[in-house]
Image (tube, rainbow, N blue to C red):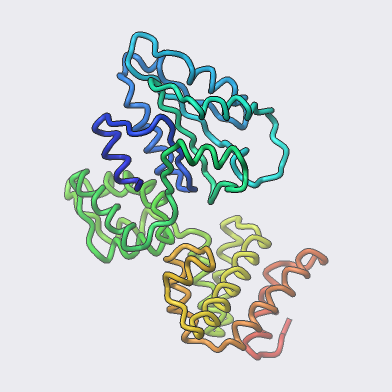
Length: 344
């Protein structure tokens, strides 16, 4: 089942399964779906017939006890369980002991008057586990996943239209770029952009440029382009801006390395005939990042990409083993990469 299908069903008050699993790392849709499930219960009944538990701090048994109770003067009870890490392959010991035997028993005969919803903000569940196999047989699973850029555009524009707003194409392109086509980030910016454009109800590029900051990843993407263009002064200036914005040097370097690694992988696999979609699924990277990587890698030789990646690896080692200023280390890296003699 898709997100759109589930939202339509919930808006109509329809429930097709006693148990749902909402799988994926998209906070916006996790929140929106939780609100939609809560609204299945009339407002005046929500105190008694709706409950939400965070399984990082509350035992599973507490949520199951609630799920097994009959609705209190109502037709339906909704119980939401957040962060069921025991469904994943994560090995870190939980702070709370969970009684999985009770869950196995519940899955054999779910309460027909209860809608039990697991909100699992993870990339995937561990399909080898017995409890996961049993859950998949009973539950309806909705995978949030990563939206393709086209889907992000369509969904965002549909939401604006519902709110009574429009957005000129240049403004939408800028918003996509500044947020890395992350729908959750875009939706977080939506209300601010709408308020700014009153009473015209048409969002212009100036609104996006004035209100929406670029993500660190997008800033680093700009930095990558300056590095590959061997624009030493421009690269060092942007690096300094990131430091002044209180970004951690090691984090900047790690994202830089990750971007160059992606460019190398994209170039090698694209030469082997991989399509954009296959690259995204193979490398497990958001389709928008693959699109940008494809636009970039064609302009540069593999040797330059490799040299930059190895140079940044050396910078990381120096950051961890010396007390030299990070900006100095990056400046030295740039002058060496650009084929200039270091003057510092």
